Image (cartoon, rainbow, N blue to C red; front, side):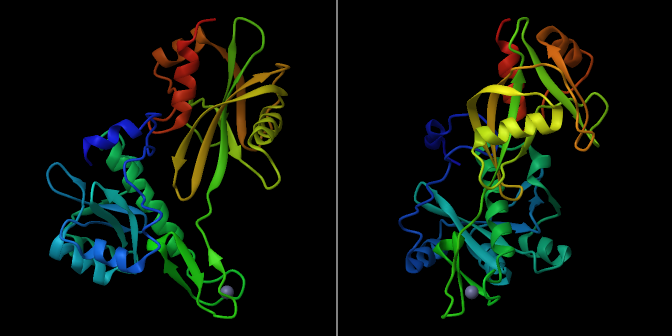
Length: 313
Ligand SMILES: [Zn+2]
């Protein structure tokens, strides 16, 4: 994508940044969508069952235009409008109805890969756009029927809304985002320590920050306090917002916080966590120096951890 969007990209977190103009005021017009889709400069990203189609040397996700885009469009179960890159429309097409072999052949691709495995090899704009495409196509694919009356639904607004096809019901369906909180819990006393946990199923030494889904009837701060208390038995006082990250795998939004513990005795739940313990900055740096991981490369937990490490005691 072009450089002039760079200024709009602020947090530096993977899958974020306003790389495309989502044109929310224009995508409600089906004639405008059709004209943008069939314009010669339109680009189409094919996806197959949430995965990118890879081609070329070095291998890169396929972005189609012209006749090849037209063929994919005809064979897809859903085409959604992602936004404008300059004046050019960027769309995504769902080939999930085909076999893998058929999808690869149609898109001129050689294999399929999840965008998350491509982090580090993609431009931030590409990672962000492909994750967005994955999330929006996933939502459309799983909203084929109305939850109220069971009738088939129809796409509207370039795939950003669906409407129940039963005229008596005509319920509107909008994409649902599932917020989760992720928090770096810090001790109140000095030297400052942070609380990290070993989750069930994670690799030996794979300590990470605590996280959990927000429940109905909770504020984000409520969710931080409940999760830390439930998982590690630690009561939390102050909760401060740090940053958020788009996490469309399939529909998440990670909301990052710094939280201060009011007591420091740890009692893990034994359900989600195997172990939780306090680390000083020196201990955490030693852990990293001995090959321990400090957050996942594409996740906000790395920002929380590295931000904390950069502060002094
Ligand atoms: Zn309905």
